[in-house]
Length: 315
Length: 146
Image (cartoon, rainbow over all chains, first blue to last red; front, side, top):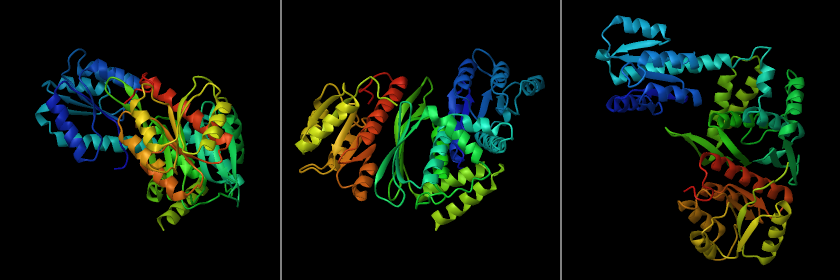
C-alpha cells in the first residue's frame, strides 16, 4: 500500500514492541511510534494524532481501559486495537464500551495477526478519509480558504495557467511566495509576487470561476495538465509532511521541491531540510493520488484533465 | 513583502571580482545589515568553511570557477556533516540546464542566473531566512545544527 499510516503502539513490553514493528515492516507499513504508558500516549495523540492504535491492557500508571477512554475522547474516529492478558470477559466488554474496535487476548497474540488487523483498519481509515474529502456544497469553499500549501499553490498554479507562464522557480519568504517564470512564448523572465494577504482574493476568484474550470492550462513535459494540478498535488504532499520554507523549481528533467519538514521523535519533533527531485514517474504517482482523493468529488472535468495528463506522462 | 531582521551571514564564492562587487551591492540593497564574506577560490572557500567559528546561513556559489569548480565545492559541502545543512544557491551565467540539474542532484537549494536580478536575490535571501527560522523553532542552535 502506498498510504503510510501512523501507528501508535502502547505497551511496556519492549519485546512485544519489536515483534509488532517487525510484523508491520513485513506488510510494508511504517515502524510504529512506541509509547511505554498511557499518559504519554494521550499526550502524543493530543499533539500529533495517528491513524491506528495498538493498546496493551496491562500498563504502568493508568491502565489500558482508562487509556482507551482518554484516547477515544480525544480522537473519536481512531481505531484502537486492544491486546489483553485479562482473563475476564468483563474487561473485553469494558474495552468495547470504552471505544476499542478490536480486542485480542494475549493467549491468541501473534505479531502477524496484529499486523493484519492494523493494515485492515488503516485501509478503512484511508477510505473514510477519501470519502470525507468529497466536499458538501456548504463546506468546500471553507476548505479552499484554508491557507494550506495545497490551496495556496493551487491558486498560484491557476494564475500561471491562465496567463501562460512557464518554467517556474517558486520560493516562499516571510509573508508570501515569490515566483520567477518565463513569459508566454518567450525566454524572458518575470518576477511575480503572491503575498499571503492576497490569498483570499485569489481564492474568491477561483471559486467564482469554479464550474467554468475548463481554463486553458499551460502544459509542459512535467505538468501535462497544467500547473494548477501539479502544484496542488505537490502542496498536498507538503502539507502532509508539515513542510515550511519551501522552494519549487521546474527544470528540464525534474521538478525540485525543497524546504524543511518536521520529523517526529519520541520526545519532540525537529525540522530537517529536504530536497526531492520529482521526475515524471514521481509526478504520475502524485497525480494518481490526487485523482483518487477526488474520485468522490463533483469535479469530473478535473478528473478527466488529470487522467489525460497522466496518460501523456506515462507515454 | 519585506526582508526584516534578523540579517543573514552570507558566504559569496566567486572568482570574478566584478561579480563579487555587483552581488555584494545587490545583497546590501536587499538587506543592508547582511554580513557578507567573500572568497574568490573554491579550495580557499572550503578551508574557510571548515575553519570558521561562525558558519554562514547561506552560501552563494559560482558554478564556473578555475581549479575546484562550483559543483566540486558543492559536493564537498554536502558531504560534510557540519556543513550540509547550509543552503547553497548556485550562481550561473549560462543557465545551462545540465549544470543546474547536476547542482540540484548534488543538493543545491536553488540557482540564480547572472546578471543577477534583485527579485531573484530577494527570493533566495527571504527563503533562507524562513529556512533558518523554521529550523530554529525546532532546534534553537542556529548554525550549529549538525
